[in-house]
Image (tube, rainbow over all chains, first blue to last red; front, side, top):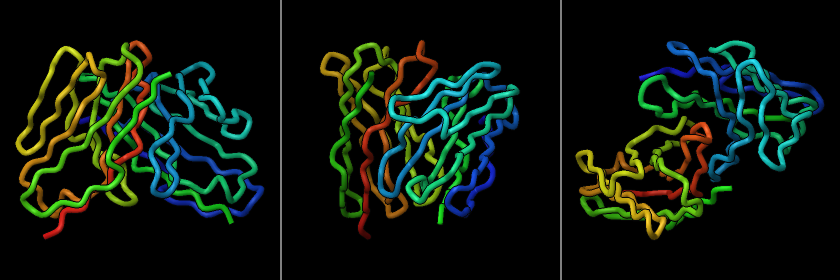
Length: 115
Length: 113
């Protein structure tokens, strides 16, 4: 199946700093990628839809100025958590639709801890 | 938008017994219903999916049923094994919306040996 890779797998940062998470489709091109956030023992909540070459579409309640999404190529989308605070600590997972069956493939996830 | 409800939130079964998880969705336009298994700290893994033109699908010990009229779908795991212990999520999407998945709340399944 298609492979989606996410980096870093975990990151610890100080409050007020910014963190960038990368999501790559390794063996296919993804015009659309999705970013999810998952708090402990909770479900995956869609944050935004990342569109190659255009602005991301954010879900209601997600601050676009805080969670910057860039999808500059067909294989890479990045999520930058700006001015991170402890409440932003979470598991961030990206996904992309595979080329054949339409199945959604997930990255490994990035665990962010903000001190 | 779409809203997916999932029950139960936790499920404990004896090894060898069956486990059933049920989900309902709100948007009648949804036409794709995948089920994911997620182990602690790992990415969700697709275990089975069903599209709206099919009422039932089976893959070895796993089966999914879909009732479009009632807008609910269920996951059935037979002959459960300890390695089936995980959190299971149902989801729904409408292809024209770009496969944007809406997830249920999850079911924590514990299979006791």
